[in-house]
Image 1 (cartoon, helix red, strand yellow):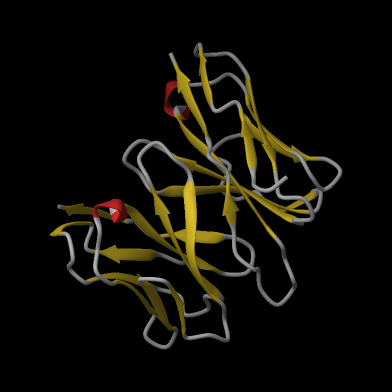
Image 2 (spheres, helix red, strand yellow):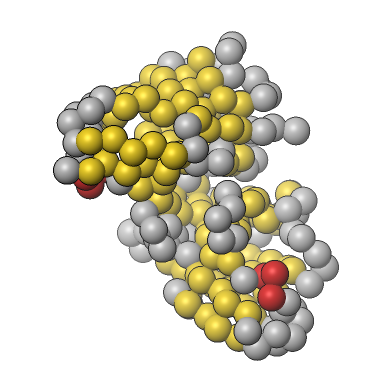
Length: 116
Length: 110
Protein backbone atom coordinates (compact mmCIF):
# COMPACT_ATOMS: atom_id res chain seq x y z
CA UNK A 1 0.00 0.00 0.00
CA UNK A 2 0.85 3.65 -0.14
CA UNK A 3 1.46 3.97 3.57
CA UNK A 4 1.74 2.06 6.82
CA UNK A 5 -1.64 0.74 7.87
CA UNK A 6 -2.55 -0.10 11.45
CA UNK A 7 -5.65 -1.75 12.78
CA UNK A 8 -7.74 -1.29 14.73
CA UNK A 9 -7.47 2.47 15.03
CA UNK A 10 -9.10 2.33 18.45
CA UNK A 11 -9.46 -0.54 20.89
CA UNK A 12 -11.13 -0.57 24.28
CA UNK A 13 -10.74 -3.75 26.25
CA UNK A 14 -11.21 -4.96 29.78
CA UNK A 15 -8.29 -5.44 32.10
CA UNK A 16 -6.97 -8.97 31.93
CA UNK A 17 -7.99 -9.62 28.34
CA UNK A 18 -5.52 -10.25 25.52
CA UNK A 19 -5.29 -7.86 22.56
CA UNK A 20 -3.72 -8.05 19.12
CA UNK A 21 -2.60 -5.02 17.18
CA UNK A 22 -1.82 -5.26 13.50
CA UNK A 23 0.62 -3.38 11.30
CA UNK A 24 0.79 -3.59 7.52
CA UNK A 25 4.01 -1.88 6.39
CA UNK A 26 4.84 -0.26 3.08
CA UNK A 27 5.35 -2.91 0.46
CA UNK A 28 9.03 -3.78 0.11
CA UNK A 29 10.11 -2.22 3.39
CA UNK A 30 12.29 -4.75 5.14
CA UNK A 31 12.44 -3.10 8.55
CA UNK A 32 9.45 -2.71 10.86
CA UNK A 33 9.25 -1.04 14.27
CA UNK A 34 6.78 -0.81 17.11
CA UNK A 35 6.67 2.17 19.44
CA UNK A 36 4.41 3.14 22.30
CA UNK A 37 3.31 6.63 23.27
CA UNK A 38 1.66 6.99 26.64
CA UNK A 39 -0.37 10.08 27.50
CA UNK A 40 1.94 13.06 27.83
CA UNK A 41 5.01 10.93 27.25
CA UNK A 42 7.51 10.59 24.45
CA UNK A 43 7.78 7.68 22.07
CA UNK A 44 9.09 4.50 23.63
CA UNK A 45 10.76 1.91 21.42
CA UNK A 46 9.35 -1.60 21.79
CA UNK A 47 10.73 -3.91 19.11
CA UNK A 48 12.39 -3.92 15.71
CA UNK A 49 12.11 -6.47 12.89
CA UNK A 50 14.48 -6.97 10.01
CA UNK A 51 12.60 -9.31 7.73
CA UNK A 52 10.91 -11.84 9.97
CA UNK A 53 13.52 -11.79 12.71
CA UNK A 54 13.67 -9.43 15.67
CA UNK A 55 17.27 -8.41 16.37
CA UNK A 56 16.18 -5.96 19.04
CA UNK A 57 13.42 -6.75 21.51
CA UNK A 58 14.93 -4.66 24.23
CA UNK A 59 12.00 -2.30 24.56
CA UNK A 60 9.29 -4.83 25.32
CA UNK A 61 8.17 -3.84 28.84
CA UNK A 62 7.33 -7.32 30.11
CA UNK A 63 6.83 -10.91 29.04
CA UNK A 64 3.16 -10.10 28.50
CA UNK A 65 4.23 -8.36 25.30
CA UNK A 66 5.18 -10.28 22.18
CA UNK A 67 5.35 -9.58 18.49
CA UNK A 68 5.78 -11.51 15.32
CA UNK A 69 6.18 -10.78 11.67
CA UNK A 70 5.35 -13.16 8.87
CA UNK A 71 6.31 -13.17 5.21
CA UNK A 72 8.47 -10.13 5.78
CA UNK A 73 5.31 -8.09 5.79
CA UNK A 74 2.47 -7.90 8.32
CA UNK A 75 3.33 -7.72 12.01
CA UNK A 76 1.19 -8.40 15.05
CA UNK A 77 1.85 -7.03 18.52
CA UNK A 78 0.13 -9.08 21.21
CA UNK A 79 -0.43 -7.98 24.78
CA UNK A 80 -1.58 -10.69 27.16
CA UNK A 81 -3.45 -10.12 30.41
CA UNK A 82 -3.68 -6.39 29.76
CA UNK A 83 -3.15 -3.92 32.58
CA UNK A 84 -4.30 -0.31 32.82
CA UNK A 85 -0.75 0.92 32.38
CA UNK A 86 -0.80 -0.65 28.91
CA UNK A 87 -3.18 2.11 27.79
CA UNK A 88 -1.34 4.10 25.14
CA UNK A 89 -1.09 4.76 21.44
CA UNK A 90 0.85 2.01 19.71
CA UNK A 91 2.64 3.20 16.61
CA UNK A 92 4.17 1.11 13.87
CA UNK A 93 6.75 2.30 11.37
CA UNK A 94 8.55 0.76 8.43
CA UNK A 95 11.67 1.67 6.53
CA UNK A 96 13.81 0.39 3.73
CA UNK A 97 17.12 -0.70 5.19
CA UNK A 98 20.06 -0.33 2.84
CA UNK A 99 22.87 -1.50 5.08
CA UNK A 100 24.40 1.95 4.92
CA UNK A 101 21.53 3.64 6.64
CA UNK A 102 17.80 3.82 6.39
CA UNK A 103 15.91 6.02 3.99
CA UNK A 104 13.75 7.25 6.78
CA UNK A 105 10.83 5.96 8.72
CA UNK A 106 7.16 6.10 7.75
CA UNK A 107 4.70 5.83 10.60
CA UNK A 108 1.17 4.54 10.68
CA UNK A 109 -1.64 6.46 12.37
CA UNK A 110 -1.45 4.24 15.41
CA UNK A 111 -3.80 2.16 17.52
CA UNK A 112 -5.22 3.90 20.56
CA UNK A 113 -5.54 1.21 23.22
CA UNK A 114 -7.63 1.85 26.31
CA UNK A 115 -7.77 -0.67 29.13
CA UNK A 116 -10.82 -0.29 31.36
CA UNK B 1 22.65 5.12 26.12
CA UNK B 2 21.45 7.62 23.56
CA UNK B 3 19.32 10.42 24.97
CA UNK B 4 17.70 13.10 22.85
CA UNK B 5 16.57 16.40 24.32
CA UNK B 6 14.54 19.13 22.69
CA UNK B 7 14.40 22.77 23.65
CA UNK B 8 12.09 24.54 24.16
CA UNK B 9 9.45 22.13 25.42
CA UNK B 10 6.71 24.52 24.35
CA UNK B 11 6.56 27.63 22.22
CA UNK B 12 3.74 30.05 21.45
CA UNK B 13 4.31 32.69 18.78
CA UNK B 14 2.32 35.05 16.56
CA UNK B 15 1.91 34.21 12.92
CA UNK B 16 4.78 35.28 10.66
CA UNK B 17 7.65 34.74 13.06
CA UNK B 18 10.72 32.72 12.13
CA UNK B 19 11.35 29.91 14.60
CA UNK B 20 14.24 27.75 15.72
CA UNK B 21 13.67 24.42 17.41
CA UNK B 22 16.65 22.70 18.98
CA UNK B 23 17.54 19.05 19.40
CA UNK B 24 20.58 17.67 21.17
CA UNK B 25 21.77 14.10 21.53
CA UNK B 26 24.29 12.53 23.86
CA UNK B 27 25.84 9.91 21.58
CA UNK B 28 27.61 11.21 18.48
CA UNK B 29 27.31 7.72 16.95
CA UNK B 30 24.01 8.86 15.53
CA UNK B 31 23.61 7.89 11.91
CA UNK B 32 20.62 9.76 10.51
CA UNK B 33 18.50 12.51 12.04
CA UNK B 34 14.83 12.85 11.26
CA UNK B 35 12.31 15.53 12.15
CA UNK B 36 8.62 14.70 12.52
CA UNK B 37 5.46 16.58 13.34
CA UNK B 38 2.62 15.11 15.31
CA UNK B 39 -0.85 16.61 15.34
CA UNK B 40 -3.09 15.91 18.34
CA UNK B 41 -4.49 12.38 18.20
CA UNK B 42 -2.58 11.59 15.04
CA UNK B 43 0.48 9.61 14.00
CA UNK B 44 3.80 11.06 12.98
CA UNK B 45 4.47 12.85 9.71
CA UNK B 46 8.05 12.88 8.48
CA UNK B 47 9.30 16.37 7.68
CA UNK B 48 12.99 16.08 6.92
CA UNK B 49 15.61 13.35 6.97
CA UNK B 50 19.28 14.24 7.22
CA UNK B 51 21.36 11.24 6.28
CA UNK B 52 24.78 10.52 7.68
CA UNK B 53 26.72 12.17 4.87
CA UNK B 54 24.57 15.31 4.85
CA UNK B 55 24.60 18.42 6.99
CA UNK B 56 21.22 19.91 6.17
CA UNK B 57 17.96 19.45 4.33
CA UNK B 58 15.35 21.92 3.13
CA UNK B 59 11.70 21.53 2.29
CA UNK B 60 9.63 24.62 1.63
CA UNK B 61 9.70 26.83 4.71
CA UNK B 62 11.56 24.19 6.72
CA UNK B 63 15.30 23.79 7.03
CA UNK B 64 17.04 21.28 9.26
CA UNK B 65 20.73 21.08 10.02
CA UNK B 66 22.84 18.44 11.72
CA UNK B 67 26.16 18.88 13.49
CA UNK B 68 27.34 15.51 14.75
CA UNK B 69 30.46 16.89 16.37
CA UNK B 70 28.42 18.99 18.76
CA UNK B 71 25.52 16.56 18.97
CA UNK B 72 22.96 19.06 17.77
CA UNK B 73 20.26 19.49 15.18
CA UNK B 74 18.17 22.57 14.47
CA UNK B 75 14.83 22.90 12.72
CA UNK B 76 14.19 26.33 11.29
CA UNK B 77 10.63 27.30 10.36
CA UNK B 78 10.30 30.44 8.28
CA UNK B 79 7.25 32.69 8.30
CA UNK B 80 5.27 30.52 10.69
CA UNK B 81 1.55 29.92 10.09
CA UNK B 82 -1.27 28.71 12.36
CA UNK B 83 -1.23 25.44 10.41
CA UNK B 84 2.28 24.82 11.74
CA UNK B 85 0.82 24.30 15.22
CA UNK B 86 1.77 20.78 16.28
CA UNK B 87 4.34 18.88 18.31
CA UNK B 88 7.72 18.61 16.61
CA UNK B 89 9.89 15.59 17.35
CA UNK B 90 13.48 14.93 16.40
CA UNK B 91 14.80 11.39 16.34
CA UNK B 92 18.27 9.96 15.98
CA UNK B 93 18.91 6.73 14.18
CA UNK B 94 21.69 4.49 15.45
CA UNK B 95 21.12 2.08 12.53
CA UNK B 96 18.59 -0.20 14.15
CA UNK B 97 16.04 2.11 15.71
CA UNK B 98 15.03 5.71 16.18
CA UNK B 99 15.49 7.32 19.56
CA UNK B 100 13.01 10.14 19.97
CA UNK B 101 13.41 13.47 21.65
CA UNK B 102 11.00 14.86 24.18
CA UNK B 103 9.27 17.10 21.63
CA UNK B 104 8.51 20.80 21.22
CA UNK B 105 4.84 21.75 21.35
CA UNK B 106 4.37 24.69 19.00
CA UNK B 107 1.38 27.00 18.85
CA UNK B 108 1.19 29.69 16.19
CA UNK B 109 -1.65 32.14 16.74
CA UNK B 110 -3.16 34.46 14.12
